[in-house]
Length: 176
Image (cartoon, one colour):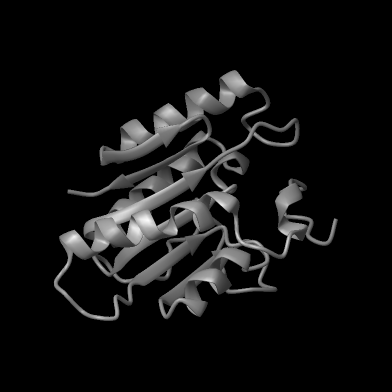
């Protein structure tokens, strides 16, 4: 494992170099939803926040498509060092149009997750889209699939955003 997190938890996906398949497979759908909701700015370039960016693979994917990406992670080998759930995200209020949270929230305890959710709501513009992914693992707070599904529902409910796509361990939603 190339990345060991400060709380002795790590994401097995951090060693991968390519963007998450869920992001690759749903990028066009997210952009289509953005085009219908935002003032026209061809080409569509959004302000993106990658929460728990790991090695930056999803951030790079978005940058390659012309987006302005802010990447946050507990380890500062890529992006800005930010102790998620403890530090306030160094992002302006109402400034973000897309939020990626792929495989990071299950490493946060309830209090930390609630703080991240509050920060996400603070930085998200109207019509912001969030993509969130979780997985169960023995070294995180969602040890079983049942735990993960409960966590997913809890996060989704606390956000209070409209569902665009929702399946086991992942969702895309929009702030209306």
